[in-house]
Length: 304
Image 1 (tube, rainbow, N blue to C red):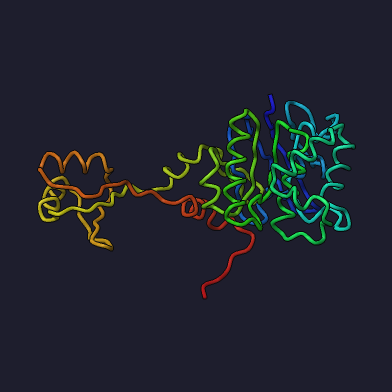
Image 2 (image 1 turned 180 degrees about the vertical axis):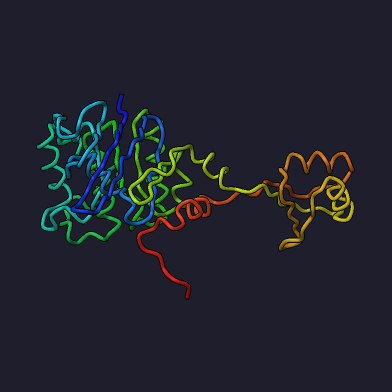
């Protein structure tokens, strides 16, 4: 199993605790969104998992082993942390060939990931001529090079155009559907909501949330129904008789707090009130996230 296991993971830099007794799992078969304000400890946790820094205490393992104990690690774990890291004087293909040789990966796999990431036509261009989006695609190609069972991606949509964002979204979902473990750190809430099945949220180095995305949003959403009707007076009276209030909204719509669409629909049917539109209104992931992390951000702007 390609399960990521974090146990009591702690990292101190001098007197500053960046990661504080973290414990969570990232199982295969789903895309896990890794969220938190700047300074929450996300990047440090990923670096600890990849053996780039040593923990003060605790463990971070993949399939029960530390990254530094893996033979040909690129064949087990692919990571995108810094798309600016490759040497600008090398070509994209040469960069991947060096990684392949160091991890017992065939040259044919290099050409395959260049094609998969959409930069095959630029394979012999020097990396210093690449745009941010092209460097991002190269970083993703490097992460895929060893056909690993575990993917760690830090801000994978950064610099990508709309076509590239759709591509990486579908890629992450497809990799998870194949039974791989996919952990994705991002600050883009709308994008995270579009691909993440599960969320792990940090705040000031501590675990705040480890839950399915839909459950997280539901837990931070108040009950509200949005509707349109051609007979608001009768519906208002019917709702008032049950302790609910029909409130006008924009574009000729109405809202009702404290109730679900199913109950409003049943009531309207009983009263013979036509409904032209009816839906439950939920918070966005961004609203739910901001509500959870309020006061836990290292930096926050004042009112304009």
